[in-house]
Length: 229
Image (cartoon, rainbow, N blue to C red):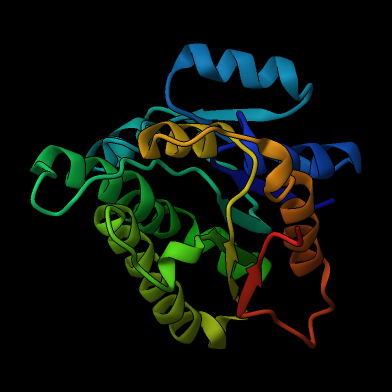
């Protein structure tokens, strides 16, 4: 039975992946930003373990984890949580830049550092749920795209560093996906949100689980998922 550490399991793609893995009996370790959120996740996924750590404050993750018990075994680390805040370069404040870089890039790097020993022993898998913005930046997307471009660099470097240890590393680049984040993006863009136009989170979850389930003789490095409508 595999053990998966998952961020972002509360909604969207993260919740869809967690449901898939929970339904088939895998062990889940779900990261929550605070104790209240951890209680909610534990209720949503009976039998799952929770860890409390705020991705918005990656400098304190080490301290938070020092007061909790980390799993002895980790077969996969799934970085799915993310935040977005649009704006032109001439208008974005350092606070806006830091908030997106912290959650989308620095926290995944710090989490990976903490769980690498277990991943090496298990010859596990690190999955970074990136974004189309991690491949191409557009107007008003500079901070978010920069964080996701950085996430791609983190994944590419990690893949080379850990290949000899048997750790697989995958970046998944979903297009616009029907989720609370997408609703916020549409609100910031001043557009009407129609979830039927975009990818169902379950479809992205299918691709992620496929990557996890590949035999050891194969590895998906980069996978792009686009709306089919």
